[in-house]
Length: 116
Image (tube, rainbow, N blue to C red):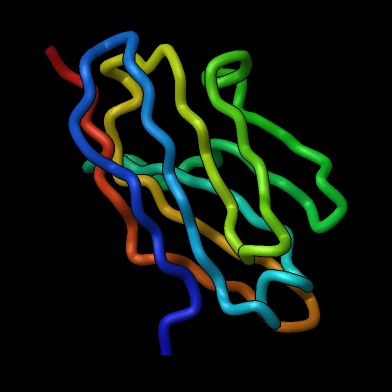
């Protein structure tokens, strides 16, 4: 059973923008804090941004001021707007849902490549 479906990755030039989307099952989304993580080969998965059920946000220092996480509770979707992208933002980006009530889940990942 697929709980999280990501979309929106791709190739973009440095300084460009992308928006990632993660659609979740309604019952899952309503009870979950949502997050975006990223991973590059040979490195551990790292937190990019979090948004709580109440809308509070938290960002990695490396993306503050450039990335914005948001959630649309009517669409059961979390977004990651990425602006002023840098080559070091290149990674596979994963959506995560976290809830003591319904458990933790990961999306399948979407590739973001920042290159000229």
